[in-house]
Amino acid sequence: MKIASVLARLGLIVLWFPLLLKAQSPAFDSQPSFKDGPYVFYEGATAIARWITEEGLTVDTLEAGQPMTACPGFSVAFDPSWVQPGAGFTPDSRTAFRKVERIAAVSDIHGQYGLLVTLLKAHGIIDADSNWSFGRGHLVVLGDIFDRGDEVTELLWFVYKLEQQAEKTGGKVHYLLGNHEVMALKGDLRYVHKKYRYTMARMGMSYDQLFGKDTFLGRWLRSRPVAISINRTAFVHAGLSRQLLEMGLTFGAINDLFREQILDQPEDSILADPYLAYLYSENGPVWYRGYFEDDFTRGQAQWILNTINKRHLVVGHTSFSEIVSLFNNRIIGIDSSIKLGNQGEILLIEKNKFYRGTLNGEKIRLN
Image (cartoon, rainbow, N blue to C red; front, top):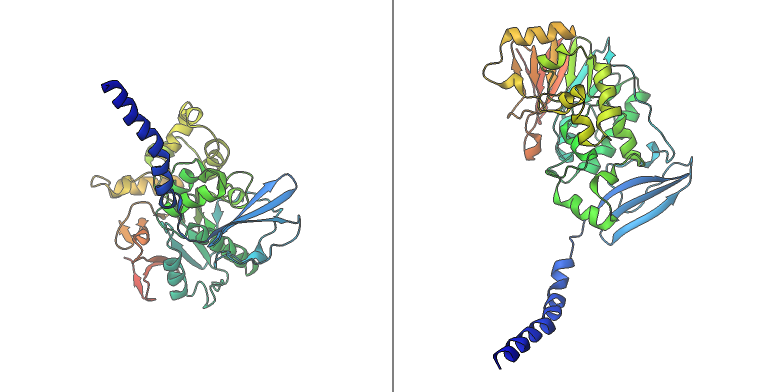
């Protein structure tokens, strides 16, 4: 009788368990209402746009060679007039830019689209309609658009639009890869905002597939550099360690190695190569934090600058409450914690003078 009783109870459990799941399934399956996209994918000669509206996933086939048109649900930052579905991206072989009179640099935006727009408007880099107004000036976005915040896609399309607009006026937007761009392209989701997990679920794709080699944004990202210089100032997301510079790698070589042998290669093949392993490590150009350790000296900073033949080096990655300067502007850290969503600064360089640009438009000289 005891066995029969146990089996009967088990039978009740088996019978009731599906009913319990069914009763809970609406809450389990529900997803929030949100917008995201567009994401443009290439499938042979066809381009497919996919985006999320409040109603769900929308898909449209694009004609090759024809510009995209605005569709309901597209990000407010997306300008279809700048997107050709069949476009490819040739990496710029130049790593040094000279005779630039005005430079602005911002870093570690981490999905905070609204804060970036406020900063750029406050300092005349974009106009009231969020279009480029910096003329022949150069804007450097020093990596880490991805992760943490919920407006990553908006930022990507916005920076792409500004890049195209700047070219028309003789200006330039430089979007450098940071560690979070590398993480996104390699499918590392440690810091991705939950919104994009819902996007993945709606799309039926992994995050790295949204930015794969067969996508518009993925191709664009893979054409971006890691290190450049403008006038006598070098720019890199995290930093250039002494050990890295002792390898004798030029900025061009660093950019090529990331593009060709790191972004789309498995980690085991990266780690098997000493050069690649070091570039990919915590001492590489997208992860290094050594400048802000207590034992980092003026002499070490000068050695780095002498080696790269520059007077200044601008980095992000290491967060502060405002832009910081080391050793009379030899090294400048511009990660001003925009990622927190309530503060942030932009670096302004005019006539070889360096300024902190605040959200309210104030310019404060760096000494």
